[in-house]
Length: 114
Image 1 (tube, rainbow, N blue to C red):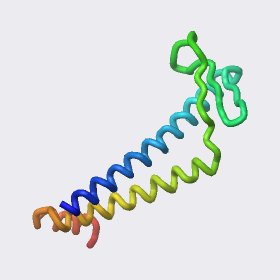
Image 2 (tube, rainbow, N blue to C red):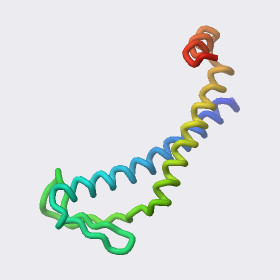
Image 3 (cartoon, one colour):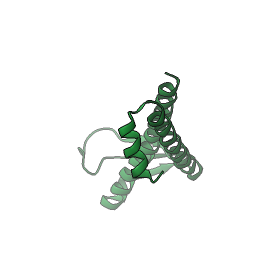
């Protein structure tokens, strides 16, 4: 079970890193769309961005405020995602080598050139 536990831990770290990167991407996309649609509805205050309305959403309602990620935070999120993805691939290979039937191991080896 040790191999499976290691794989599940790597998968959990991958999902966390993906969620973090996705949140940054969604914020950047929302701000970009609003800037193109109507820049008057975007305000930056210190370390936050305010969107008075969403481009594809209702025009009424309260403004949304989100922390604006510093370039260093974006870089860290990208690096964390890439490292988590690499670790997941490695743990996946270990799991296949340890637990997969021989036919699957051969197919994986042929596909990856091992």
